[in-house]
Figure 1 (cartoon, rainbow, N blue to C red):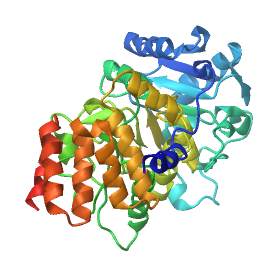
Figure 2 (cartoon, rainbow, N blue to C red):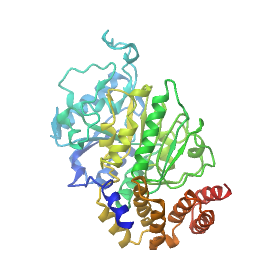
Figure 3 (cartoon, one colour):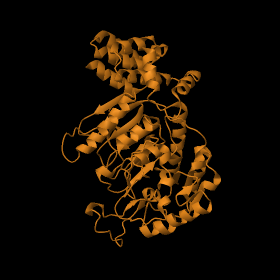
Figure 4 (cartoon, one colour):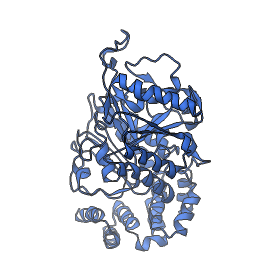
Length: 467
């Protein structure tokens, strides 16, 4: 049983191995009017070994939103010149693939009514307000005529080859280290590096709305697919189908992944004083304006996620329309199953450029960049308690691939880690319950409660025992 499960596990995760120094492929932009902005830039450069010449300070507005004229005059055009002067990007040729914007750089370009859209553009897309980030992703196309009304199609949308996302193909991957404070912005790279070193472990929570028909069904379907992708990858996945968001008191612990919708401001579980995000956690809440107030710790979703401990998130700064939000199943598939970096997964999943999307987090964050052998060896060598999550991932993948429940039970009982693991004992209780062995299930659940240090986990198991 152990061999079968582990082979399945090896073939599905940790497939894209990091090679070389990726820090040299990042250019960093900060607001030279704000010392805190430069501090974030310097911190990231040191953390990811970004060459000093790749740092660019520009005197920018301290406001979150700037005019189209201001965007061109103070940011876009000076940045193009600086990148060319430093010989790191000239048109679609250069040494960088990523552009990182730091706390203090504006994130919204306001509507300019003086720009008249071509008649052939659909009425709903006759708009030129956009995220700063999405506009800057088009820098490699600066020598081509670009219509700043409506969307520009991403030339590498849905790619399975991360190397195709490059200036040569007309695209620069733009993310930002941002959030309610400069310190929290810096923490995003700390959290990413910690997860790369120790692993991204925990559970996934998918918050659906129970929609079966109508214009919003496509959103429901997308998030359902996210749940399927994460579950097939071996992560224990909790699906909630109630119309409301996950409530206060919901037993969500060790959150590695979250995807849900549709509240305008953070609420329920994620409005609690503390949220049990795992190091490296990726959180996404689908709402038209989830990214319109990135630097607010209590409004919308991106700021609160970062404030409560998430490592990477994304959203929209103005109304994007449901179908033009990043394709969530593609994003999670690329980062989990294909081993893309955060930025690579984001831009592979983004159809519309010159539009509303922002990606907040370390662009180089790659949670699945080691071989499983390296991961297991490191966990054993450091005597990390996270080995229980590694074992659980293999067990879940085996079960998804058709391994008998009885064989999984035997495997867990034979694992030496199981004797003191609340995670594996909880799984054992679930499996015994699934085959109708109530007494054995209760025994395993009670052991899990005894071993657990998580109030949320204890609450969840106690609810199971009551039922």
